Length: 373
Image (cartoon, rainbow, N blue to C red):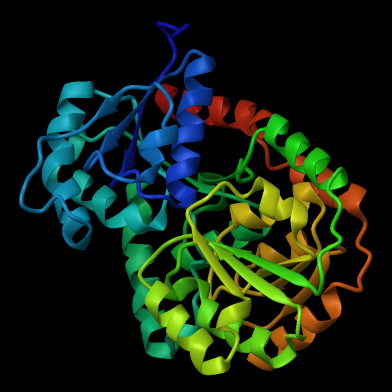
């Protein structure tokens, strides 16, 4: 039941296209409402595969318009969100992703003192070495220009807190660490139980990757690494959908591994985590990837690129780390990982710190504190 004294929180999403941020906001909103918080979601458009699993919470969706498409979704949100804010009158505006920072800046400029306090969660690395020195300097200046906009900034793991303070030049007291609640305790337990009772007697080694088929995930490099070490019966499965599907198909054919590559699309991942021999994260940059936490909960050996400051603390004792964009190092780690014996109990204990149940009190404390200020 909603509490009359609890804050009204408005979260912002462009759409319900599948992604970690979108799933997080849906999960958070449902959990916050169960705690009595009046949590709602402003959507740019009612589109995306997550509609099928979207919880029964209040959504505010503007009528369709010319800019309501993926190419111009930020402009669309900047145009429509002020009216939604005036209608809903939230105590807190929650932005769950770096990708919404421009929207937050626009709300401050358009609404001025009428703009509610903004809480920003940093979802991806702020320091991006692969973009080059000049781009990094420009990006840092933009981050620092943005930094005054936010009442509080949320780091999704302790190592990210220092990066936020350094890159955004914000006082440390404005940065709060709340671990990325990538799953519920029930889901974590289900992943563990399913893997424990699954017999993996398939021929060859089965490597699993999960994520949007997008350049950030660098699945093209993963294919190259797989091709270098794949034995006759080995398989690589990449779960997800996105713009790089055709490029991945073409590259697999060119490498001669197309018969050993599976691209099932957007599917439930639980059984795949139970059946695989190793999980591989090949990304160029991340924040605190939910898929890594799910792999930890299952107890699946991991190979991951060191693509964010949070990755070492997640993978320690669970597998191998390699430099981003290093296909030779990735191939070598993949070739070795299936013979490893990680501490599964420790992996699952680590994953338990990244559940809704473990972090809910931190969120309610933060939202109430922002409202009181």
